[in-house]
Amino acid sequence: MRTLLSLAALALLAAPLPAAACSVASGYRVPTNLELVQRADLILLADVVDGASAPGSEEEMQIRIRPIAALKGTIPTGPITLPGAMLDGATELSNPYDLEQPHPQSLAGACIRYAFPHGSRVLFFLKADGDGWAPSAPPFSRWAEDALGDDAPWLQAVRFYAEVGALPEGERKAAMTARRDALKAQDSDPVAQIVAADIDRQLAGPNKPLRKELPPPPAN
Image 1 (cartoon, rainbow, N blue to C red):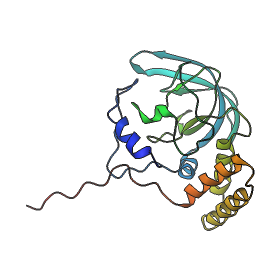
Image 2 (image 1 turned 180 degrees about the horizontal axis):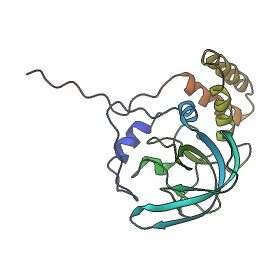
Image 3 (image 1 turned 135 degrees about the vertical axis):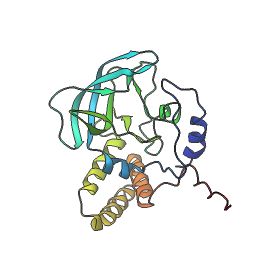
């Protein structure tokens, strides 16, 4: 992630909106998109239909989302509520052609995206939480990106990574390489090149740590 290291360092000093600024341990690696897909229990395309918040009280923040499709897991039968999120019509939408960087809000304050315009369509990465769902949202990850069209590059990439994750581990690299090469061959299709570049990043392996491990304490 070319610019993420410097942006993340600035984020740790940013003003808390709405929660206290997060911090990450030395050696923390932002999960790759493939890793993000693998660790989620449910990847849900959903519309943001309602929400509530109490200023300064993260515990009372929530949004209600209406499921459209499940890219991984079983689609819920009705709307679900996500804690720790809020409606905000001034929140900008994700860049649909950038599959590397997370939503700008993930790089400041709480270190994950938590605000969504009413009516926006978002691809949520979720984990089971008792009888409900909660964000599967490591710091600075793409856990909740807007996906306004059915053929959005982000949806294409995540659908493929979900398919790859279902393969035996020994077959995954070959499948990713084949798909990347097929997409690169579509040199007149800019969206194919965007998805191919993201597959290349997954093939490159884990991201570098945001901060190096601290040296061991001096011997007495």
